[in-house]
Image (cartoon, rainbow, N blue to C red; front, side, top):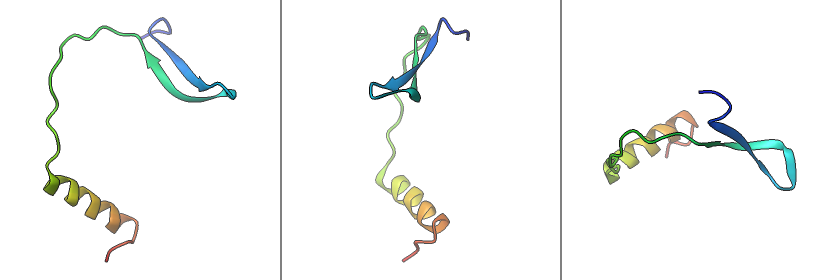
Length: 56
């Protein structure tokens, strides 16, 4: 990918501070991503709580 395909996005108040990337690329294939189930979300949150030392 070269610079013709992306550019840095900045805040209007701080043009020297990038906050993201704007991509201009072709989409080769569209597919629906599977949504996480509540049990998967809870497991992920529990893992983060453990890593942060916030276990109940």
